[in-house]
Image 1 (cartoon, helix red, strand yellow):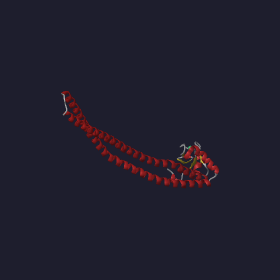
Image 2 (cartoon, protein in one colour):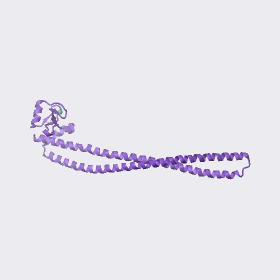
Image 3 (cartoon, rainbow, N blue to C red):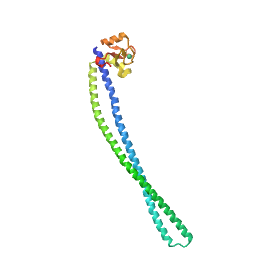
Image 4 (tube, rainbow, N blue to C red):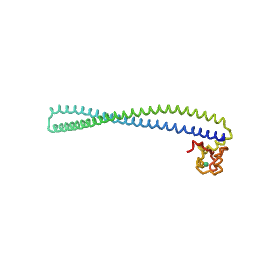
Length: 239
Ligand SMILES: [Zn+2]
């Protein structure tokens, strides 16, 4: 293969590797974000359970306070009964006592109901806490994985850049400019193989003359349809 063409194929491969680093990093970051989202969700569930339990406890304590007040009131009524002077007064006290007792019943029922809510929330808390711990563990694992993956990507990237620098140093400026001009629009497909007599950039069939020139690999040949640089793959790389 023509030396310049060989360099172009190498350069194109290196540029593809460089461009691949971005998506690789994004993929790793997506994994971490996913773990982080799951952890936030588990934390939100825990917070909600805690808020619901707190609200139920607050209501319960209000009812308990009310019960204490009612109990005092009932004692007062009992004292007043001894000093009753008229039937009207007696009826009024009786009514007051009944209302107090009804309120006591209501508060007791409410306390029962709230206790059940608190119990059920407590049983969920254990489960939610286990989920939160698991999610936190996954975040830690993802962070560790990211650190080591980033380390190896950084190393690979340094190697690839060094490889590119060396190659570019060996290449002719004219060829480089020609390549960069095509790369501007063709991006990572500036240099493409010919397979089954078709350009693997635009996938159009190339004419026999161009195909013969590509097979010879003596000159730098471009696709007559799209202008990409064409090359013949080594036998082992043929698909
Ligand atoms: Zn083409």
